Image (cartoon, rainbow, N blue to C red):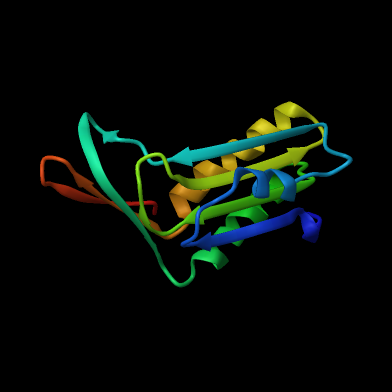
Length: 142
């Protein structure tokens, strides 16, 4: 794995930018770039969501880097980027943006899919959802 393929990594309270993530993975040797954008939706499991908040363990960026290094080792990526939001978010806000650029489109799609799937499964970020019916739940990413 080329050490400089991880071009952007972050967990922040400020709004996310698709352009920032897309621009971070630009590479003249990449023929394909895949971007995934996760947004806060207004429902979950047929329940109306009124509020949502993300929190993260202090090791979150180290764990995210480990996930990205594994993706970079398994795919011929030219560049990777991943940012996740923490704090209180509104319906429609960007919660996560990840991208992968590779020599070919199929590799870019596969690498991007693995990046978001492994981020959700392994990186210590938790979602607290409040529902319009007064209930709430915590959803752990790992």
